[in-house]
Image 1 (spheres, one colour):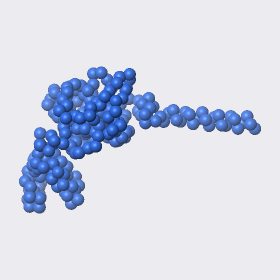
Image 2 (spheres, helix red, strand yellow; image 1 turned 120 degrees about the vertical axis):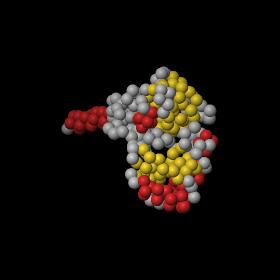
Image 3 (cartoon, helix red, strand yellow; image 1 turned 135 degrees about the vertical axis):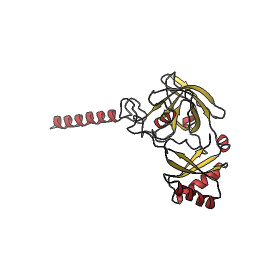
Image 4 (cartoon, rainbow, N blue to C red; image 1 turned 90 degrees about the vertical axis):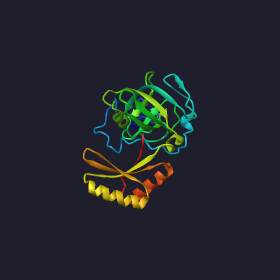
Length: 259
């Protein structure tokens, strides 16, 4: 009887250890992810998902600002990204990391405009320009990496898609930090609605001009008319107008920045 109990106990303990080793912890990178190799998502990003990250006031993560070591190399994060500019190679990460926590505790979304960088403060914002085609995007840096000698930044799949290098895996890019001081100097637009009937969009534009006392403009592309409010020079006002629009009937309204 004792031998049977011992055997059952030993078997349970072995199964328990096996379960722990297979599930892994959030800091155990060898067993953390359910996929062995990274892959692209099963769909392309939507137009809304490919809009620039909106630069907002943020509180820097104290824990993500401490010096750290990875693969035998030491890294010291910046205290302030103001004036930062650098050129190098960008890569991207997708399904393998989707849904897992980033270095500052946010959840990685491969369709959000985010990025990983070894030393920029978390979170911070950078403008990334693909030097081969001139396309650019603003991303929110909320993760650490990529830990390869020849890589400068890891972008979300959506950001890489917008920059036009998702098929190639990497691209030569230029990074420029974007702070609140930079963003307030830019004019904002709010895309309110889109439709295929110009008459309806023009009628809505008239109503919104009267209601918000702001200029409107209509942009046509692929037979779709997009109605935008603006430009709005004050970033705080733009955010307030956006929130008011969302409380009304325009839940899909979003901010755009003039380049």
